[in-house]
Image 1 (tube, rainbow, N blue to C red):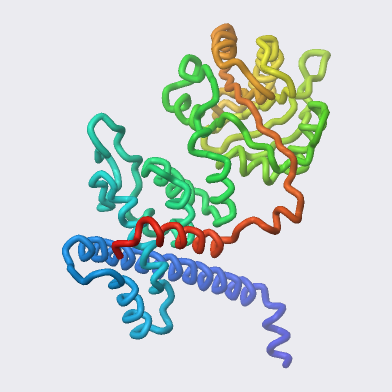
Image 2 (image 1 turned 45 degrees about the vertical axis):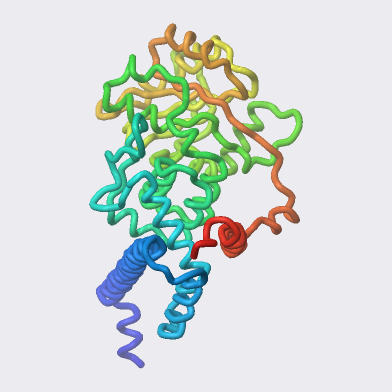
Length: 372
């Protein structure tokens, strides 16, 4: 007993045990990823075989169901061999092979058809590391491969859970990413300009707020800071929250920008100004002054130039672009969307992954899989 008590208080022993625990968890994660990767590679080969047999074999209707019965009987403890999942495997394989697009070393630079854009890039290891449930969500809500590959890459880059992935699918992140009106190409270095443009969205989705009816800019700002975790998720990877209404001493006056962030990849401060009205050209003057103040007071020599983000209720894109031409500060202009929070009784009725799978199965069984 005495020996155990001595060990319990021994810092060297506790440190060693702590490191062992970290090593075990790391190994568990790597093992889980390897298992998932090998499973998806198996699914891919099965999808190719199923599609090939469907073209060449003359076994009549129902052979896919019979295949499922045979496999489930042979491997009773293995999930994923049901008739429904075999249908999904076939659908998944066909989706990423439309127009002769094949997942090989990289899904990239292959034309979908004459005059169409090449497919977005994705590494083979990334493709097969995404969990199967995530793949089902993506192919159920994406009609083209470019959109799907975008969500696959983002899932791996950011470690998205199914819930987070579904949120960004529902809020059309692919269509919003990099769409803010900006003047970055004129005022920032090429490498900084492209990354800054891709970092901003239009519109921003603030559906997680509970604001209703008439509200003031201060209430919008407070709602975002009180839900800063959700707000950071919506802003995207790399944003670190510095503060709200951070005081900046400018001569004998003090100014207070709405929200101040630091972006870890852009290596610069980001000043966010909120407007609950339609965009007006005069909004840029105030934001431009805040940017200058941050550059003089906060910016370090190793930091890149501060950028501004004006988020307003609505905007005229042409007016916004014209206004940006008159400023010498790098600024992006976006809108925000705000809707009422869903009542709990409605939230409780939202479909689960199992519900979605069942619905997909019913639809596909009557349409796409009659030949199976």
